Structure formats: C-alpha cells, structure tokens
Image 1 (tube, each protein chain N blue to C red):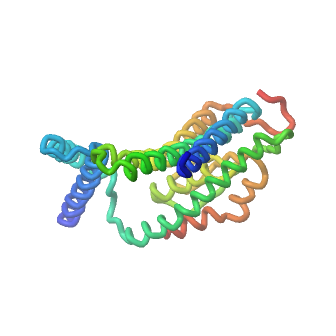
Image 2: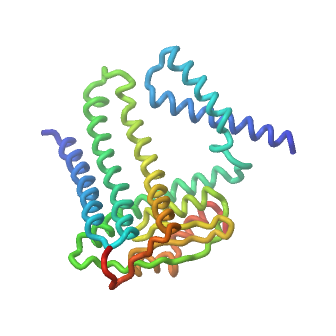
Length: 117
Length: 170
C-alpha cells in the first residue's frame, strides 16, 4: 500500500459519491427540470474527480516508476486532461440543450406544493 | 481592406493548423515519418476547411482577454465544487429544500464567446441552469432550483459582472 494509492482511492470515492448523489436526485426530485439539476451538475465534478484519480495513478506507475515506457504511454495523462476540458465544455452545453428542448416543447415546470411527476 | 482580410485568413489557417497538428502529436504519441506526415496532411485539410471556426474576427485585445479568462476559470472551478455540494445537500436532505422558478434578466454581452461562457457558467454554478439565450438582446432565461440561487443572479449579479469584465463588453 503506497500513499499514492490512498490518494487515488480517495479521488475515485469522491467521484463515485457525486455520481451517486446524481442518481439519488434523478429518483427523488419532482420534475424534469429539477432532475436535470441533479444529473447535469453532479456528473461534471464526479467524472472529473474520477479522471483526476486515474491521472495520478497513471503518472505514478507509468511515468514516475517506469521511465522506459514508450512515449505514447507517457502521453496518456495529456489525453486525460483533454477529456477533462471537453467534459467541462460539453456537459453544461448538453444540459442546456436538453433543458431548452423541454422548454420549447412546453414541459411545465414544477412549482412548490404540486404533486411530483 | 481586402489585403487585411486576406492576412487575417492566412493567420487563421496558420493558427488552426498549428493547434490541430499539436493535438494530433499529443494524441498519437508516435513520431515516425508516416504518422507525422499523415498528421500534417490531415491538419492542413482541417485548417483549410474550418479556419474560421477557431479564429474569428479581428481579435482585438485578445491577450488581455485570455489573461482575464484564465483568472476567471479558477473562480469558476470553485463554483463547480460549490454547485455539487449544493445539489448533494438538496438531494440528500430528507425534506428536499427546493422551490423551483424561472427567472429572466438582461446583460450587455453580445459576442458569441461571451454569451457561451456566461450560459455555461450559469449551468455550472449552484442551483441554476440556462434555458434560453437571446443573442441580439443579451437576454437570458434561467431555471433556478430555489430562491437563493435565483437572487444571486437577479440581485447580486456577481457572475454577470465577472463575465462582462473578462470580455470587456460593458
């Protein structure tokens, strides 16, 4: 057990916790728009935390401990960083697109005190 | 005028080509002749077709805008963390403290990039998601999950003032 394993596990666990709250929100919240709040937001940080965990793991085992690894293996962290950037760009955009589609097709927003749908 | 446009186009192609080729090298990670030449050809084709997507317009004050944007990103990342704790709190709380509403407000932003930044920032910050944007009037429709995040956009206007500062579109 190395200290890096503990850090990586903490990142993965935090990521899974936020994905988990996203799922709970999807099940508990009353209507389409509020459910999107849960899924659209928790996904962003959940996925990014998981990727940061993988990033640290890869840097430690394949870049730091294994200097003879080929360059294409050493470049994997760069690809993971690109993934983070694209998640930050695509996730809010997709959430907004779904929201806009629902609003334009006339899905009524839930108000406090109404029945859940 | 025409010469200036031609110069802008060449610059756009060059910047797009460099960005695409760097992206190719980082993703492939193989530096033999075949892969590098294939990368040059592909980046050149992409740069010729879509140079006006990446580099647009005259790009005035580009440097100071990118610098302000870089500072803004760190504040935005912190807001994302807050947003996730906010959602987790509202979802896991036994009584679910939500009171959804739709709010509208006007901004002085007009350029595409500034509007996209504000819309995505609103979606990423606690308790609010952008529904519609009207680019001509800079008008935003936002779905807020409770009164407090709605007031943050309507009364405090912290986010709007930060984005207008970044893009200098007062």
